[in-house]
Length: 398
Image 1 (cartoon, helix red, strand yellow):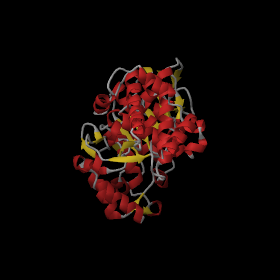
Image 2: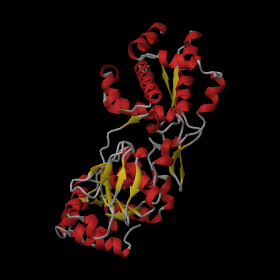
Image 3: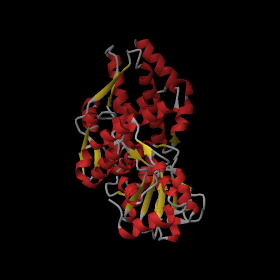
């Protein structure tokens, strides 16, 4: 076993840099390892991050010196049992969460053990040199070891959770898939000035939200849009200037972390209403809930990702009846939809949202769903000329 582990380490990581720093580190590792990972830190110095990585490597080396198999303990990021709900924060990881053990002497987990060590080594060098890399860069650093981009993405989040350090503090960036447009200007960390109102093709959400500064906006509200197609329709219709100054943003479906960070940053900086425009289906509702309350997988970083003030603007299940959307534009709920809807109704945050619960039960009762595009069955420009203006003028949100 020891030779197998050393073989992985020698092939995939070079721990010399880490161990060299450890020799200069004058704190007892046992006391340190007990103290460091007790709470999630929103901001942390580079040295503190290096110390936390050094603690993990010290434990591995100590296990090897005792001829024991090193084990890594990762908080379980997929279990609802590890999550609690706070109406002011959303879904947050409990302090006493269950863990998944990654053993170095088990054939089924030794590869993941090596992958984690490799990424820890990369992160250590990035933090030490104050440089940045994307998750894609890390994957191409050793495609044979990682096998897929998905493996890297998951492990980076696991490490962030294990160290109790925000991913951006690990100097690992992710390419953003989200788009943003409207009355908003800001400066990127490198000094680039971004004007979201000057382009008819929208602007990609920044990959370094924490580095944004000098935010300027006269927007009256922010609108989160579930789908790229709807976002593009609003962009083509010049929605952000015709009704009132606003900002529109889309994560193109299930939002990436950068899109969520951007919505949170806008709320923190501007303190203006934030609305969600999603399909009247269980999938759209769940996406809205991710922005508002967070997700189980990222509950360890809830403080910097959730925006509990998000309001449901549309498409409401009750709108389908009120507007008399043609029946041929409605879609029957599938078994999967019904299962997802039941799951949503059991979520802990629904008790604080009786109006949301009422709308979801109406969908469950009627057994139909509808996309935002179904409004074109009433009139081609109904969404931008009638539906949204009336909703925003007369308070048609919940």
